Length: 219
Image (tube, rainbow, N blue to C red; front, side, top):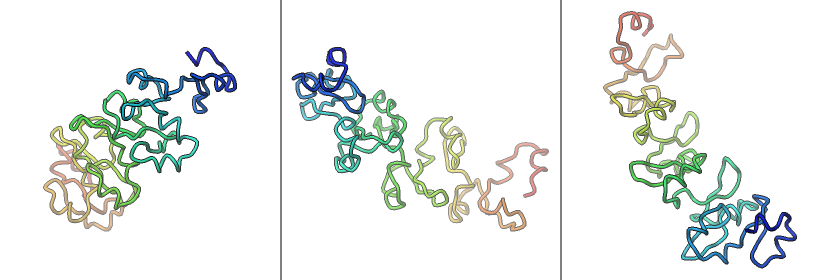
Protein backbone atom coordinates (compact mmCIF):
# COMPACT_ATOMS: atom_id res chain seq x y z
CA UNK A 1 0.00 0.00 0.00
CA UNK A 2 1.22 3.49 -0.91
CA UNK A 3 1.01 4.84 2.63
CA UNK A 4 3.44 2.14 3.82
CA UNK A 5 5.74 2.13 0.78
CA UNK A 6 6.57 5.84 0.70
CA UNK A 7 7.07 8.17 3.63
CA UNK A 8 7.84 11.38 1.75
CA UNK A 9 6.25 13.34 -1.08
CA UNK A 10 9.05 13.11 -3.65
CA UNK A 11 9.26 9.32 -3.50
CA UNK A 12 5.48 9.03 -3.47
CA UNK A 13 4.94 11.27 -6.50
CA UNK A 14 7.62 9.39 -8.43
CA UNK A 15 5.47 6.25 -8.27
CA UNK A 16 3.01 5.57 -11.10
CA UNK A 17 0.44 4.18 -8.65
CA UNK A 18 0.63 6.69 -5.82
CA UNK A 19 0.12 10.38 -5.14
CA UNK A 20 0.84 12.62 -2.15
CA UNK A 21 -2.21 13.78 -0.19
CA UNK A 22 -1.36 17.28 1.08
CA UNK A 23 -4.35 17.31 3.41
CA UNK A 24 -3.55 14.09 5.28
CA UNK A 25 0.21 14.29 4.78
CA UNK A 26 0.28 10.72 3.50
CA UNK A 27 1.00 8.83 0.33
CA UNK A 28 -2.17 7.33 -1.13
CA UNK A 29 -3.15 5.25 -4.13
CA UNK A 30 -4.22 7.27 -7.16
CA UNK A 31 -7.99 7.28 -7.44
CA UNK A 32 -8.08 6.83 -11.21
CA UNK A 33 -6.49 3.41 -11.01
CA UNK A 34 -9.11 2.11 -8.54
CA UNK A 35 -11.93 0.27 -10.30
CA UNK A 36 -13.97 -1.14 -7.42
CA UNK A 37 -16.61 1.09 -5.79
CA UNK A 38 -16.16 -0.26 -2.26
CA UNK A 39 -12.37 0.16 -2.44
CA UNK A 40 -12.77 3.68 -3.82
CA UNK A 41 -15.10 4.77 -1.03
CA UNK A 42 -13.09 3.08 1.72
CA UNK A 43 -10.98 6.15 2.53
CA UNK A 44 -11.27 9.92 2.55
CA UNK A 45 -9.11 10.49 -0.53
CA UNK A 46 -11.41 9.14 -3.24
CA UNK A 47 -15.09 8.89 -4.06
CA UNK A 48 -17.10 6.88 -6.56
CA UNK A 49 -19.00 9.07 -9.01
CA UNK A 50 -20.57 8.14 -12.36
CA UNK A 51 -18.94 4.70 -12.33
CA UNK A 52 -15.50 6.24 -11.86
CA UNK A 53 -13.19 6.67 -8.90
CA UNK A 54 -12.11 10.32 -8.58
CA UNK A 55 -10.39 12.56 -6.04
CA UNK A 56 -12.71 13.42 -3.16
CA UNK A 57 -13.85 16.99 -2.50
CA UNK A 58 -11.56 17.03 0.52
CA UNK A 59 -8.48 16.29 -1.58
CA UNK A 60 -9.39 18.21 -4.71
CA UNK A 61 -10.60 21.52 -3.29
CA UNK A 62 -9.49 22.00 0.32
CA UNK A 63 -6.60 24.21 -0.77
CA UNK A 64 -9.03 26.54 -2.56
CA UNK A 65 -12.44 26.93 -0.92
CA UNK A 66 -13.68 29.22 -3.70
CA UNK A 67 -13.29 26.30 -6.07
CA UNK A 68 -15.11 24.16 -3.52
CA UNK A 69 -18.08 26.56 -3.61
CA UNK A 70 -17.99 26.45 -7.41
CA UNK A 71 -18.15 22.65 -7.24
CA UNK A 72 -21.67 22.80 -5.73
CA UNK A 73 -23.80 20.65 -5.62
CA UNK A 74 -21.15 17.92 -5.53
CA UNK A 75 -19.13 19.54 -2.74
CA UNK A 76 -19.65 22.05 0.05
CA UNK A 77 -17.46 23.99 2.45
CA UNK A 78 -17.21 22.57 5.95
CA UNK A 79 -17.52 25.81 7.90
CA UNK A 80 -16.41 24.14 11.12
CA UNK A 81 -13.26 22.39 9.88
CA UNK A 82 -12.49 24.98 7.20
CA UNK A 83 -12.07 22.46 4.40
CA UNK A 84 -14.02 21.07 1.46
CA UNK A 85 -16.28 18.06 1.91
CA UNK A 86 -18.80 15.93 0.09
CA UNK A 87 -22.20 17.65 0.12
CA UNK A 88 -24.37 16.39 2.98
CA UNK A 89 -27.33 15.66 0.68
CA UNK A 90 -25.14 13.28 -1.33
CA UNK A 91 -24.46 11.08 1.69
CA UNK A 92 -26.77 8.11 1.44
CA UNK A 93 -26.27 6.34 4.78
CA UNK A 94 -26.71 7.41 8.39
CA UNK A 95 -23.19 6.10 9.10
CA UNK A 96 -21.58 8.45 6.58
CA UNK A 97 -23.84 11.35 7.58
CA UNK A 98 -23.23 10.97 11.31
CA UNK A 99 -19.48 10.82 10.67
CA UNK A 100 -19.85 14.42 9.47
CA UNK A 101 -22.25 15.58 12.19
CA UNK A 102 -20.38 18.82 12.75
CA UNK A 103 -22.14 20.09 9.60
CA UNK A 104 -24.63 17.39 8.53
CA UNK A 105 -27.55 15.69 10.27
CA UNK A 106 -29.49 12.54 9.50
CA UNK A 107 -33.29 12.67 9.31
CA UNK A 108 -34.87 9.48 10.60
CA UNK A 109 -38.17 10.55 9.05
CA UNK A 110 -36.99 10.94 5.46
CA UNK A 111 -33.83 8.84 5.84
CA UNK A 112 -31.80 11.55 4.18
CA UNK A 113 -28.72 13.53 5.12
CA UNK A 114 -29.06 17.31 5.22
CA UNK A 115 -26.91 20.31 6.01
CA UNK A 116 -27.70 21.75 9.44
CA UNK A 117 -29.93 24.82 9.20
CA UNK A 118 -27.34 27.21 10.63
CA UNK A 119 -24.97 26.35 7.79
CA UNK A 120 -27.53 25.85 5.03
CA UNK A 121 -29.09 29.32 5.23
CA UNK A 122 -27.12 32.47 6.01
CA UNK A 123 -29.85 34.98 5.13
CA UNK A 124 -33.60 35.16 5.94
CA UNK A 125 -34.42 34.47 2.29
CA UNK A 126 -32.21 31.40 2.05
CA UNK A 127 -33.47 30.07 5.36
CA UNK A 128 -37.13 30.52 4.40
CA UNK A 129 -36.63 28.23 1.41
CA UNK A 130 -35.22 25.36 3.46
CA UNK A 131 -37.72 22.81 4.71
CA UNK A 132 -37.55 22.35 8.47
CA UNK A 133 -35.72 25.61 9.18
CA UNK A 134 -36.74 29.09 10.31
CA UNK A 135 -34.95 32.42 10.66
CA UNK A 136 -34.30 33.64 14.20
CA UNK A 137 -34.29 37.42 13.77
CA UNK A 138 -32.99 38.01 17.30
CA UNK A 139 -29.92 35.82 16.89
CA UNK A 140 -29.75 36.45 13.10
CA UNK A 141 -29.34 32.73 12.51
CA UNK A 142 -31.11 30.01 10.58
CA UNK A 143 -32.35 27.40 13.05
CA UNK A 144 -33.98 24.01 12.97
CA UNK A 145 -37.75 24.20 13.31
CA UNK A 146 -38.90 22.64 16.59
CA UNK A 147 -41.47 20.48 14.79
CA UNK A 148 -38.61 18.87 12.85
CA UNK A 149 -36.90 17.63 16.02
CA UNK A 150 -37.71 14.06 17.05
CA UNK A 151 -35.08 13.53 19.72
CA UNK A 152 -36.04 14.47 23.30
CA UNK A 153 -32.54 15.55 24.32
CA UNK A 154 -32.14 17.68 21.20
CA UNK A 155 -35.50 19.34 21.86
CA UNK A 156 -34.65 20.11 25.49
CA UNK A 157 -31.32 21.64 24.48
CA UNK A 158 -32.84 23.86 21.76
CA UNK A 159 -33.33 27.35 23.24
CA UNK A 160 -36.54 28.06 21.31
CA UNK A 161 -38.23 24.67 21.82
CA UNK A 162 -40.09 22.82 24.56
CA UNK A 163 -41.31 19.26 24.87
CA UNK A 164 -45.09 18.98 25.20
CA UNK A 165 -46.82 15.58 25.30
CA UNK A 166 -43.66 14.03 23.84
CA UNK A 167 -43.79 16.42 20.87
CA UNK A 168 -41.21 19.13 20.27
CA UNK A 169 -42.88 22.51 19.73
CA UNK A 170 -41.86 26.17 19.65
CA UNK A 171 -41.66 27.72 23.12
CA UNK A 172 -43.79 30.75 23.98
CA UNK A 173 -40.66 32.85 24.47
CA UNK A 174 -39.79 32.38 20.79
CA UNK A 175 -43.19 33.37 19.41
CA UNK A 176 -44.05 36.68 17.80
CA UNK A 177 -47.23 38.60 18.71
CA UNK A 178 -49.42 36.85 16.15
CA UNK A 179 -48.18 33.36 17.06
CA UNK A 180 -48.64 34.12 20.74
CA UNK A 181 -52.25 35.29 20.38
CA UNK A 182 -53.12 32.19 18.35
CA UNK A 183 -51.57 29.78 20.83
CA UNK A 184 -53.68 28.05 23.50
CA UNK A 185 -50.55 27.61 25.64
CA UNK A 186 -49.28 31.17 25.73
CA UNK A 187 -50.27 34.75 26.52
CA UNK A 188 -48.79 38.16 25.71
CA UNK A 189 -47.42 39.93 28.76
CA UNK A 190 -48.21 43.64 28.75
CA UNK A 191 -46.75 44.30 32.20
CA UNK A 192 -44.07 46.85 31.31
CA UNK A 193 -42.99 47.10 34.95
CA UNK A 194 -41.31 43.70 34.62
CA UNK A 195 -38.86 44.42 31.81
CA UNK A 196 -37.38 40.94 31.55
CA UNK A 197 -40.79 39.35 31.24
CA UNK A 198 -42.07 41.42 28.31
CA UNK A 199 -43.28 39.41 25.36
CA UNK A 200 -44.89 36.02 25.01
CA UNK A 201 -45.00 33.75 28.06
CA UNK A 202 -46.44 30.38 28.99
CA UNK A 203 -49.86 30.47 30.68
CA UNK A 204 -49.61 30.00 34.42
CA UNK A 205 -52.02 27.05 34.42
CA UNK A 206 -49.67 25.16 32.09
CA UNK A 207 -46.38 26.39 33.53
CA UNK A 208 -47.15 25.55 37.17
CA UNK A 209 -48.67 22.47 38.77
CA UNK A 210 -48.43 23.46 42.44
CA UNK A 211 -49.64 26.40 44.55
CA UNK A 212 -46.16 27.12 45.87
CA UNK A 213 -44.54 27.49 42.47
CA UNK A 214 -47.47 29.51 41.14
CA UNK A 215 -47.49 31.92 44.09
CA UNK A 216 -43.83 32.69 43.58
CA UNK A 217 -44.37 34.13 40.10
CA UNK A 218 -45.03 37.87 39.89
CA UNK A 219 -47.22 37.40 36.83
